[in-house]
Image 1: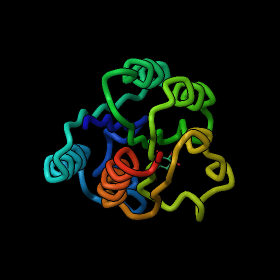
Image 2: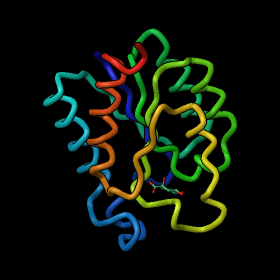
Image 3: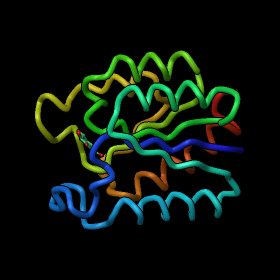
Image 4: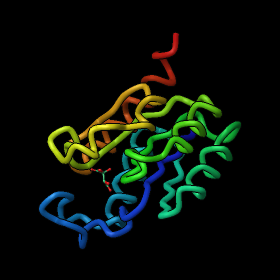
Amino acid sequence: MKILVINGPNLNMLGKREPEIYGRMTYESLVALVEETCAAEGLECEVFQSNQEGAIVDKIQEALGVFDGIVINPAAYTHTSIAILDALKAVALPAVEVHISNVREREDFRQVSYAGLACVKTFMGMGLDGYVEAVKYLKWYVLNGSN
Ligand code: DQA
C-alpha cells in the first residue's frame, strides 16, 4: 500500500511558526515521523508540502492510480479552497484530514473545512501525533473501511 501525505502553506515553517500553537518540532522532524510511521506499518509513502493551492491540486490529481490514499493537512486552504475539495472528490481516493491544532477551539474563520467534506475522518488538536493516527487510520480504512 502506498500513501501520499500532503501539507499545505506555512507548514514548512513548523518549529519557528507560532510555537505556542504548533509546537517546537520542525517540518523535517514531521517528515521523519511520518516516514517512520509508514515504515513501521509496512506502507510506502511520499510526503509533499507546498505553499501554492494549484500545486496541491496538481499533486492530488497525480495521485490517481499511484497512491491508495491521502493524508492531508491543507493548512489555511482548509478554510478557503473549494479547488482542493473538488480535487479530492475527483480522484475519489480515501483521504484523512489532519490539523495540528484544535481548529474547533480557534477563530470563527477556521470553523469551516472544505477539504474535510471529502475526508473519511479528521484528527485535530493532537500535535504531530495526529499524523501518526491518520496514517494508521488510513491503512485500516483502505484494508477494511470501505467494505
Ligand atoms: C492548521 C490549522 C489551520 O487553521 C491553519 O491555517 C494552519 C494549520 C493546523 O494544522 O492546525 O496553517 O491546519
